[in-house]
Image: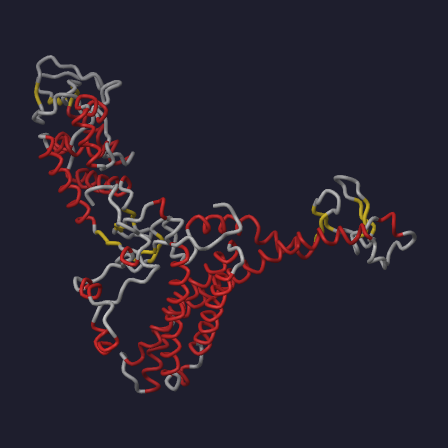
Amino acid sequence: MDSDDDFMSDVSSQDAFHTQGSDDESLGEDFGDLDAGFSDDKDLLKQKRKPYEVKFEVLAPVDIEREQLVQVNEVSTILGLPPESAAILLRYARWRKEKLIEDYMDHEDKTLEDAGLGKNVDSVARTEIIPGFVCDICCDEGSDMETYAMRCGHRFCVGCYRQYLAQKIKAEGEAARIQCPGEKCHRIVDSKSLDLLVTDDLKERYRTLLTRTYVDDKENLRWCPAPECIYAVDCAVKARDLRRIVPTVQCRCGHEFCFGCSLSDHQPAPCTLVKMWLQKCEDDSETANWISANTKECPKCQSTIEKNGGCNHMTCRKCRHEFCWMCMGLWAEHGTSWYNCNRYEEKSGSEARGAQAKSRASLERYLHYYNRYANHEQSAKLDKDLYIKTEKKMTSLQSASGLSWIEVQFLDTASQALQQCRQTLKWTYAFAYYLARNNLTEIFEDNQKDLEMAVESLSEMFEKPVPELAKLKVDILDKTAYCNKRRVILLSDTAENLKNEEWTFNVEW
C-alpha cells in the first residue's frame, strides 16, 4: 500500500494469484505440494491459488481512513510538516508517496506552491475580530464580526467562509482541493481550517468525500459497484496487465466483479474483448438477424439490398447494377427467363455467389456466438429467478421428505453453481468469437462443451417436481460438484494460456 509502483514480482506466476482468505492461508501455500501419502489431510490445508484467481483485500471505510492516516503521519515525519499540510501534499501527488518525497527534496518551494500550500505552512487556525474590517464577499462590517484568513492572507467573515465551504462540500461534492475563496488564489483549505469553520454534519460529509477521493486516486483501489455497498477492494493488478489477467474479485457484500473494468465477473474474456463484444452486440445483434434473413449484397458495390417485389430482376439504386436475385448473376445473361432463374453455372453468378457466401459466413459466425451468448444470459436470469424461489422449494422438500434444513441445502448449492457456470459459459462465447482457430481452440471448445452439457443436466434435475428431488439428492450433489470442477478446468486452462500469451486473436486489441 505504501507505493503505487509496487507490484507483485510476477503476476503471471501461480503465487501471484490469490483470493482473500483466512490467516491460515500460508499453511496451505507452504504445504500445498505434499506427496500423495498425505492426501487424507489435504482438505485441512489451504489449496494453491487457481490460475484465474488474483490476490485482493476488501477494505471498509474505517480501514481506508486508517491507511490515509498512516501515510499522512509518515510523510509528516519525513518532511517535518504538519499533518494537515502533509495530507494536502499527498492528495496533490495522488498518494504517490515516494515520488512526492523525491520532488519535495529536489524542489521544495515549487512542490509546495503547486500543491497549494506556499512557503509558510506553520500557522494556527483561529478566528479574529478586526475593528473596521469589511468583508469583500458580503460587504458587511461590524465591531464584533468574526473573520478568518488562511496563510495566504485573504480574510473574509466567518459567515461567508462557512457558506462557501458548505457549498463546496454539500452541493459540489468537493473536499480534497477546496481553494481559498479569494480571487485567483489557489491556496488549499486544510483540515484544521475546515474543522474550525463548518458544522459537525459537514465534517462527516467532508471525511466521506476525502475517503472517496482517496480510493479514486489510488490505482490499486476500486469501490464495489454493487448498489449501496460501502466497501472498496485493494488489488495490485495494473492496467498494463489486463491483457493477460481477468482480475475477478469478491466484495464482502457477495458481489463478484472485475477489478479492471468494474463490470460483473466476465471470466475468461479479458476486459478489452468484453468491451468490444458488448459494443458489437449493442450495434449489431438485432440488425444482424434481420439482415441475414431478408437481404443480399449487390455483386458490384456490396450495398445491402432488400427485395421488395416479386420480380427477380434487381437494380441497385446506388450503382445501377442489374442482377438476378436468385443466382446473383448479370441480368443481361438471363435472356427471357424473367421470373424463373435456371442458369446456375454462369461465371458472373458464381463469383457473386462466392462473395455473397463469404459475407454471409461472417454474419452467420457472429450470430452463432451471439445466440449462444444470449441464450446463457437468458438462462442465467431464469436460474436466478429459480434461485429466489429455492428457499420455498427447500421448505417444501423439508416438509415432504422429512429431511432437515441442513440436508436440503444441496438445492441452494446447486442453484448457486448453476448461476456461476451460466455466467462463465456466457462469456466463453464472447471470448471464442475473437479467438483464431488452432489446437488450443479445440481444447477450449471441448472444455466448453463438457461444462455446457453438465450445466444443462444439472438444470434439468434442479427443475424436477419437489417430490422427486429427495431421490435425486445424490445425483444433484454429484452433478453440482462436476459442474464446479469443469468450470475450474475451463477457467484454469484459459487463464494459463492467457497469461503466457499463447492465445491468438482475429482482431487487433
